Length: 479
Figure (cartoon, one colour):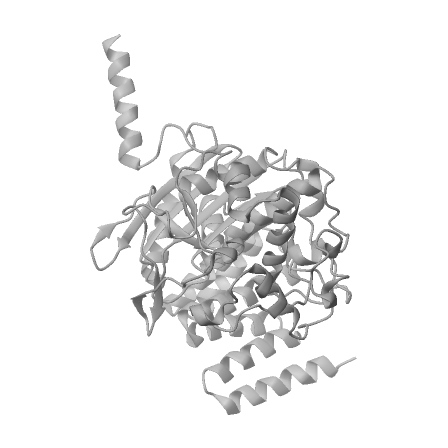
C-alpha cells in the first residue's frame, strides 16, 4: 500500500514539474510519450530566440490526448512577470469564430440557408448588398467595404446600424464571389443576423450559447470585465524591439470581429466542443468546412468563416488573432477520424512573426512524419535564419524527399511559402536563400523567379530585380 502511494505521489509530482495537468479541456488524461513534448519545448525555445517572442502558451491535442501544454517567457516584460498556461491573452479576431459557430448553429437547425441572400433575414441591409449570400459574408467573399477608416474613437460609427450604412455607402471592393478579402464588416452583418434571430444583443447571445454553456470562466468579450491580474500585456515589434501596444477602443458592436480575451484552456475547450459536434452537428461542419470555388475557378481561403487549408491527407480549419495567436483543427476528412488541435498564443514578438508560421512549427515538432510540408518549411526557415549555405539547403530538401513522397508542385509551394514567412519575420537576406533554392530546384517555373525578383526589389536591389522579372516573363511567354 505504502509503495503504491509513493508511486502515485511521484507521478503527481512529475506532472506538476512538467506543467501538465492530470485532466484537461479535452476530457482526457496526458499519456503521450516524452518525445513530442521535448520537441515542442525545443521548438518554443527556437521560436523565442528566432523571433523575439515576449511570451507564449501552446497546447497540442491528438484524438483527445494532450501531447503538449506549456508556456514560457513574460506576461509583462516591463514588470518581469512570467507567463503561465493559465494567463488570459488578448486573442483579437478569434472572436469571429464565436460568430461563425453561432451562425453555423442556425444552419444546423435549418433556421438559416447559407446560400440564401442575407437580406432575406435582414431586410434593412444596404440595397447594394441585397443579393450577397450568408456564406459569402461568412467566407469573406462578399466584396463589401470596410466600415471604418482608422483606429481611433472618432473614426468609428456610433452604432451598428450606422456602421453598416457607412460601409454600404462605399463602392464594393469586388463583385461577390470573385475574390477572398478579409473584412471586419462581414462579421457586423452576421452579428446583426444573430441579433435579429434571437432578439437580443450579440454579446448576450455569445455568452449564453458558448461562454456559459461551455463553462469558459476565463473568456470575455471586451476589456471592461477583465480581472485586475492574470492578463498578458500585448506587444508589437518595432525596429526589432518589443513595444507595448495600446488597447484599441473598439465600440461594443465590434466585439463580433475583435476584442476577445481568453485563456489557453478555454480556447481548447471550445475547440473540443466543436470537434465533438457538441456546438454544431458534424454533418453541418463537414458541409460548411469546405472552401468555396470562386468564379474564376480558384479556391477561396475561408470555409464556414474559418481559414481553410490542406496538407494531404489532412484538411485544416482555424483562425488568426491579431497576427499573434492562432488556433487550428487538423483532421482526415471526417471529424471522427484522426484529429489534431493546435493552439499557439503569444502576446507579441520583436519580429512580428506570423502566427501561421508558429502553428506550422508546432505541427512540425509533434508529428513531422504526418506533416512533412510543415516539417520541411520549419527546417528551411531555421537554416535560412542561421545563414546556411546552398549545400545545407539542398541536403534538407533531399532528406525530405526521401522521407515523404512530396510532389514537385507541393515542394515548390512549401519552399515559396517558407520564403515569404522568412521575409516577413527574418528579413530579405533569409528569404533570398529560400527563393534561390526554389530557382535551383525549379528553374522552369516563372513563379520561383518572380518571388526572388520581388524580394530583391524589396531589398532595394532594383537592377537585379529587373533582370529576374524579365526571366519570369520569358518563362511565362513560352508556349
